[in-house]
Image (cartoon, rainbow, N blue to C red):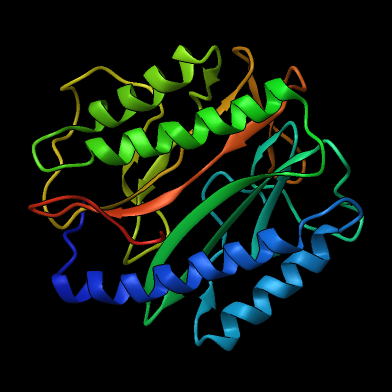
Length: 253
């Protein structure tokens, strides 16, 4: 069942979204060659808890996971698409790209967001991939209006990514968010215009395009990370969006 958030819910989620944006912005400023994943994760945990919020990923276990997630951030480097596990051994190197995904709860309402950051000097094609995925999220947000559909969002993402020569990840999806970290509906990163569930005022969704160079199989490894089978890099961006009777509200921007 898709839940409808009240205006009061959305106002609370705006506050949580602002804190989440600051979390990701400050983590991004720490990213440089030689930094390890645990350092970034410890910073995010302290920042979130110091702002009276609860890290949403820490100890969270989805149906597909073999064990609870052990960290505040998902840090996914290069060919890891999502759900990368931070550790002291996860070192960022010059030329890497890294997705930083984070969720938090403020007053028991959840928001979710992700960015991909270039580390040092990154190859031009990889930088173009990152830009394309970020642009596809902006295109998808523009379509997130009452009367449009889930298919319209997926089409906007797919069209932008493929027009720039890349391929969306089809196996992984965005989702509803708010009362829980993951809710209905699933938000695919590909689609057909005017197909699927129609958007209504009060829906809150996490749109999260993911893409790589070429079409690839997605593999779930022993740590529940999702990786590209062809070892090509993947980029990932995400915002939490409230659907209204007017323009969509980007709660995590």
